[in-house]
Image (tube, rainbow, N blue to C red):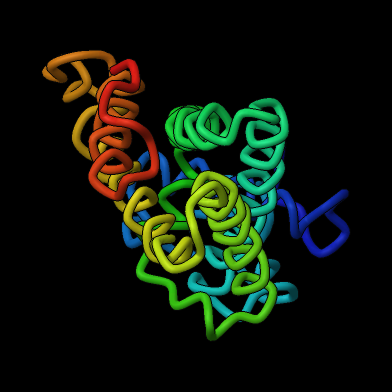
Length: 207
């Protein structure tokens, strides 16, 4: 098929899809707008009708990723109810599953160097994702007296960071074979240790 001009069926989304493939293959800094245009089978000038440059294209890929991510972790949270711990763990497992199934989105969201605050739509989507985890954290600590509750925002951020670490070390690509246990089990055991330390689950809770 020859290159197409502006009258592409859905040029904007075709460029995002091309970008996701390129990010997964080469990383967020490893491709050019021209390569994205070529993969989308449009002229090199066509992308600029929708995006100011590569960073704007990656930001849209990240925004779409957060929208998918929010939907999945909300579903995981809802599926775990009414048990707050089960809901919290379901979100953690969903995080790992998303990183595997949506590699291009994941890299655009977390490893592209974007600053969400410079893009209102991206910032909103990222904020909604953080809000789901914070809500799950608040539910998990609701049984404690107010004066003893740890900050839900803080420990949600800690668990998010732990999840990201497991993804980077063990849940993507060949390094997964070196994990001491399945990444999901590794993450869950780490979260349990952390939650016990905060007094959110009893010491004798099953590992």
